[in-house]
Length: 237
Image 1 (cartoon, rainbow, N blue to C red):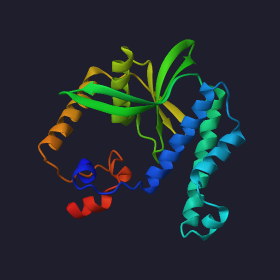
Image 2: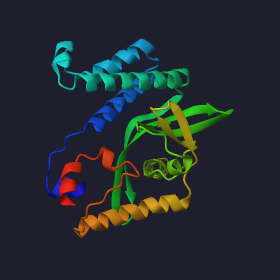
Image 3: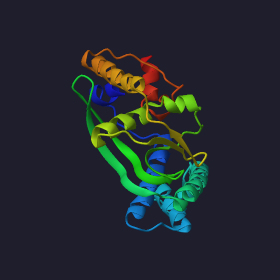
């Protein structure tokens, strides 16, 4: 993607999967902004918020005339189902919000900088103990196996960034699936997984610095599905 964005300067247009995921993330951020303000939004209010996000800038007349009307409605209903599950889980136990949609910027590897955004950091009561959870909002259409979650690069990145910013490790990393409405806790990652992240960053930066780009498909880890540049990449191959 770096080549297409920064060298070829191709425009970045979110695909439909990205648009859907971004709006789900906006809804989750809105919900926990309200929690930080001391109130739990109502169920109906939360559903209406989703509708305002998904149909933003469109009247019912516009939607009815749109050639993608059926797609818009299917995605809206899919989103409502996810919102209902999300609301059931987090309205009952929102926890204490430490950080919501919080940007990080930390050093990594050979004088590189790793940037990103924590979806949610919160404190919860878990089996009689106070735990700090770092939660990753996921809209993947499938639920990955436990082993895949443990090696998920996003969770490892959150773990690494949290340790550097807070000088301690989180009690739990959590993969929250909007599809299932379930929280999947993952233990803080062992040193070998942190080192894998650092090595990956160093390797990627070396490829960029030496202009050693090559087309690479990665459907196994769902990366290609989220990429804006699948069409030029196919021609490049």
